[in-house]
Image (cartoon, rainbow, N blue to C red; front, side, top):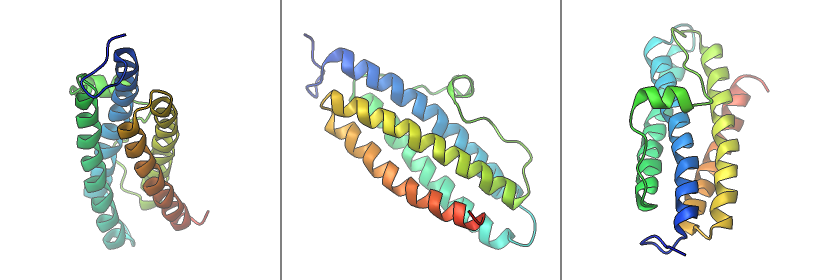
Length: 157
């Protein structure tokens, strides 16, 4: 059995990297969606949402980098072409959204997608004894569950 330089089975590292590349695609599309919401938001909640969207896209961008670096740590290559992200992402592009409620609903859908996908990666990482990936996913899940609660509360749910 071949092991990676961090001591994981090579086949486990490859499978995890594949899952992480899928996650990376979702992060990239959600990042661009939220960036667009930030740029295009209009209406009575402009000031509040403009700031919240900037906070969110900055956080998403940090996570994009962390996921890509985790893929590299697993000895694999992160996807880096936007055409690949669009093809692989379960989160769809959102264009020309300027309504706050529509933007927040889209964010809730995107974050829910990320949380579900991260739970699957967490399970796979745990099965592979990959504490690094498991810890990263666990941190992301707990942060995003709180964000989901907050954005859902904004919507009155």
